Length: 269
Length: 243
Image: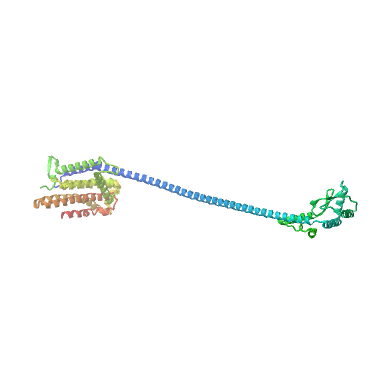
């Protein structure tokens, strides 16, 4: 008989014991070790995952900050560039203005200098011209001229308008001293009488006159009484001419000052 | 010349006896337990681990994967029984390389005991998973007419399990013994190597078949495909090494 039933039972028992033994010493420890390792690996993976997520977040944050910084830097740079440009423009403008001012000033100074120079030149010329004219007239003054002057003076007296006459009359009346007639040369008796006569006709009154000779009158006669003055003199013409020339030289329009009616007369003697 | 290690009796007292089968089984039990204890007493749960621990882990997870591949979705529950079956048979067969060793699996008593354990374990697991009614009902499927055939199948497959393993192991030992007398030296070495392969294949077949039976009983697989085709599927690889 190949089967020994006692052995069968013993072997079955042995096998069951072995099952228990291996379960106790092999499967359980090995499986629990594997489980523990898997748990640990899972935990480590989860941890790594969390760390990676955190790192990703940090990286994103840093990236964001970096881009923000870049943006800020760019805007700052842009602003600074703009400011620098504006400042440069302003400085340039200022310099241009200063240069323009300086140029204007120097131009002005130059112009003024030129003007002054030309003015001085004109004045000098004018003075010379008048000095010459005066000297000529003084040189030319003579008795004949005196006579003619007296005639012109008396004619003037006669041609005086009513208001002038009245004013002169009032002046003569109020004057405490006799009216004074000044001339460059001594007047003859005849001439004196002519003047007195003409004055009397003009004012319709007897006027007392005193005669003085004064070389400053140049060539002419002057009647002064109580602050009123009636004169005919080449000096008057000269000063009138001088005034006109002055006006002409300084550039002011001298349309009416240039031509008093007796202009030609002294020049033509 | 012994046909079975049962015949080598060291001690006997009436019904009780101590034969080579039991003694070598004890030896194997001691070897397995001691080896497992030596390795597993210092298990590392970290990433660094010893080669032996790696070996054991591969072994255990490999068995678990095989069990899962059969269709049992909770391999840990069946690992104790099926894994021990495989390990015991494999180690018993592999130890044939040691001179003077008589594999306990070459004794019909041992294989019968193992087959009986499977015979008992199958309904136990079946009842645990499906309940008593559910398990018993599986004998009436697909029709109640099939009940006698199902019962016969249950018996015959147990017998087949026992005889297949015993036949293979016994024949291996026998062929080796015969060849030693006819052609000594090199030829027996080749046969021994072939015997080792046969032993591993048998261990695999035995435990896989047990897993298939349990899976069928537990109802995780269609009973029709497994309960009725087992003796044939198991029978085929056994023929190969013998010829």
